[in-house]
Length: 79
Length: 238
Image 1 (cartoon, each protein chain N blue to C red):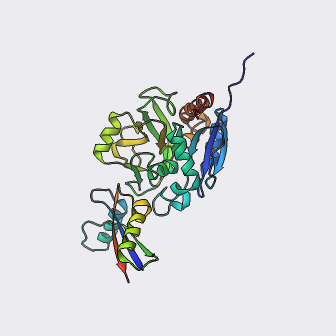
Image 2: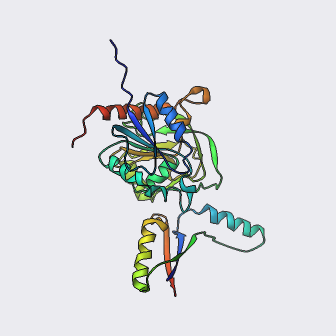
Image 3: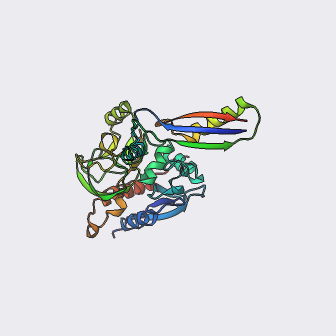
């Protein structure tokens, strides 16, 4: 089964990378407001049981993929 | 007859991507310690280890988040056990990031607010003057020590910062107007609740000889050497 994890900086956490990209977009003439940058992690996980895979990926997020102090995450399962 | 002071063993952990390990070992040796480089894949520290230093660098290429992967190195289990029994552990720069990711220190290090890598001397104020890291400093003493990092913006939620402040866990602050990275409450160094684990963004190992601009870092590292010596004198309860 494939899983996609979206990791985002939590609201209120300074995201200088997002700010820099927003400024660049504005220089290009795009009217953008808030710009936040996170990361995408695509995973192939053994097992066909969606609930079990989701629980497994949640443990991955808690232990390594996200830092709960500053980041939130979402898990999408595919196939 | 005057006996020379014993040279306590201080383990300097080398992660893949560490680059200040040799500077740290050199500085600690110059200040009277027997510094030993310990590869991260080791599961044990030298038997008579009196203190541990996690040096600066870019462990695992800073992939994912700075320090996030290094904290799973085999040696880190031993470092955590050493810290749990009161052993002094100092994390410098990347070492600070690793200790935060490992949950041994509060907060987390984020990219500098300016998004620029900073490499310069900064003025610091000693907020906590106590063993094992700042016993040789006066409270409020001003130190000049260089920083060099891209991700040194220490962050913790405001209520946690207040708690740490009240508990005396803020060890060093950037002086007013000197904050090089946007760190919350100007925090440059923070300790755990027992005070035996500390992380700093500034590099004391690069400031142990006035000929190189400042000798102030020697106050911090010599405090650590004192603590390591003290620990090696005290038998550890089995």
